[in-house]
Length: 167
Image (cartoon, rainbow, N blue to C red; front, side):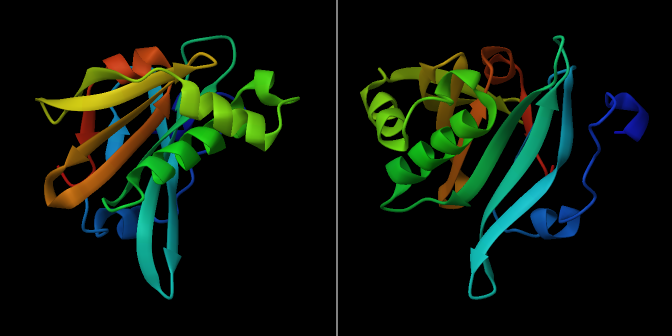
């Protein structure tokens, strides 16, 4: 992706590309025609990378819409990890949450109806669990190697294909 593909004020972050590629778990990036990958955030502890977040922006409206995918090792806290990703997304992108407390948002996340869906990854149809809140869809899928992938994005992104960084 060239810098010229991005609107004024949006820049591609050229950090963590190598660390994301060598993370050891699949890292998803959107293949939507109007989506642009901005870069990766790495979260870890004691020098060990635990989560890779791929930051994107959707350029199909009047203002860029941020969205992310997160990859981490699946474990006993999958529901918590998914909820935290959704909470981060809402707090960073939805105007409607400006007056809501963190406790109110967590309750809305917990009470949102869940449904089954399909996420397309590298040409494969992968079953997902999803919920919608404040015009964003929050999906989670489990991929090979016990990878937990969570996605916080507009519906048009969820419906579009994804690819893994290593493929």
